[in-house]
Amino acid sequence: MSTTTSTHVTSAKINILIWVLRVLMAGLFLFAAFGKLSGQPMMVQEFNAIGLGQWFRYFTGAIEVVGAVALLVPAVSGFAAVLLLLVDIGAFVAQVAILHVDWIHTIVIGAILAALIYLQRANIKARLGL
Image (cartoon, rainbow, N blue to C red):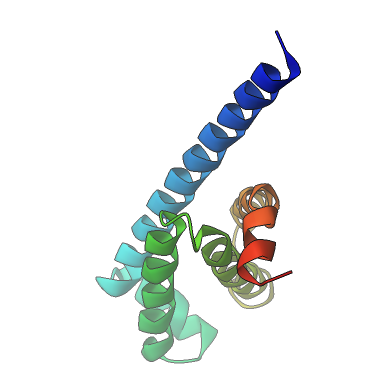
């Protein structure tokens, strides 16, 4: 196998991995947003405990929807992953400091988003003109 063919195969595998991660994260954040925006009792209780009001539940759900949809748009997918990583960091802080519930899933989601950002770093830099 020539170097060009090997590079093409590797590039194709990375592209498939990026799309798998995009779809996985988009689905997860759309699911999370649905719970917030539809007023699921657990979400209402959690946001009451956080103490910022129910407007923050709607705000967080809206950001999750926008970020999830944007993840599926290659031109802005890297930026969407950064946005959703910020949401995930906020969830981690809330779950550790206020809610005192299981937080390991926020670490796993953050790691996947960080990998997605890393894999798309060239596109992010190009969009920023760097």
